[in-house]
Amino acid sequence: MVYDLYQGLLNKKNKLSLIGLGYVGMPIAVAFAKKLDVIGFDLNLKKIEQYQSGIDPTGEVGNDEIRRTSVDFTADPARLREASFHIVAVPTPVNEDHTPNLEPLDSASRILGRNLTPGSVVVFESTVYPGVTEDVCKPIIEKESGLVCGKDFKIGYSPERINPGDKVHRLETIRKIVSGMDDETLDVVAAVYELVVEAGVYRAESIRVAEAAKVIENSQRDINIAFMNELSIIFNRMGLDTKAVLEAAGTKWNFLKFSPGLVGGHCIGVDPYYLTYKAEQMGYHSQVILAGRRINDDMGRYVAQNAVKRLIAADIPVKGARVAVLGFTFKENCPDTRNTKVIDIVKELGEYGITPLICDPCADAQEARRLYGTQLCPLESVRGMDAVVVAVAHDEFKRLTPEEIDGFFGGGKKVLIDVKGIFPRKETAERGYLYWRL
Image 1 (cartoon, rainbow, N blue to C red):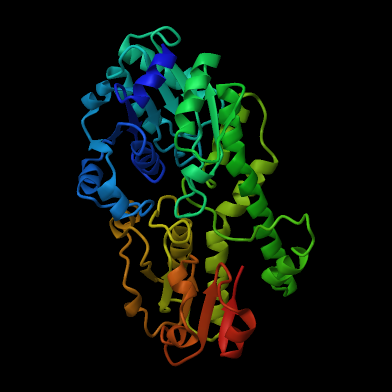
Image 2 (cartoon, rainbow, N blue to C red):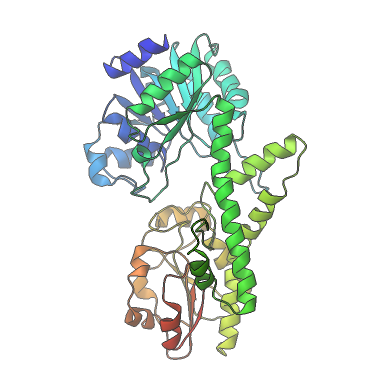
């Protein structure tokens, strides 16, 4: 059954569907469309209309690529019945209490179940804790479809490794973990992904192993960044420049080159909570992972407090101070504002009576307004400021000249908070700035 499915995909008698066309799903759909017939499904009709018009709101592949692609974009769930190999790539966020929010995955499983045809293979890409694919998604699909997994359809898991905004580490260039419920399914899942992943695939021994591997990738990175953030706090009290210390330590061959910063987005700042949630269910309370999460979740407030301290040092009244925040996305050169930790800086400044001007030429302004009620301003409006917080290391900000930075401020003392350390510390201080960075 599964072998025939693969051959059907190759000769285009069968179609592949991609469910969820965000920063992860859309590039996958575009890549597969170069080899196979692909149906790209998303419930967001506005997003589908943009893709159909040749517009890439994510910026991941660009408008030209969207115009050229043969992906059949649709918001009609019934179209999924035309496909027999399905890839589910929907978000897996957390709730306010940091517990997993599986509703997007539940919804996608219900929709797919209602439109699943016998003989299909379903592969999940969403980041989850071990067991979700088989214990949560599979029963939903069986209930909605009336089909039996293992007999009427097969399931697999292949965690996404796409890095939003990264033009080097892409689907094609990152080795892909693949897994299946049995050897036959694993073979076809591996063969399908090998069509587009130039770096090749790694066959995990089970779906649960693949799920666990994915969730610890970002947990490991989260912990390493938390260590850097803690070092930044310690060195700041010692009067040491953290970046200078890290550059010196980085001359050793086995020193891991991480740097302090805000940890947001829909992966690194979220995935560890999936792992610790499952650990709690198994009777174990995480020590290291949750400690790292607490440090990273507090960094926005820490940055804002240091901005306030510099305003005080400059004899500038804090309440009502004119402050600009440059950058609002969760990472550089990416329009995605979901789970951005810059909002923590904004909220903490608000506690001191400061309503900052927020500017981000890369951000999705409509998304920022919808999610946070935030109005983004053009860079040209940043004038007469008492302090400027450069929160995100966009290339556009890195290219700012000293004269352009000077133009952001008024005539008094100038406070510059450089969260990612993109400007030279010594030269900036010599120009008369009260300069601070993590």
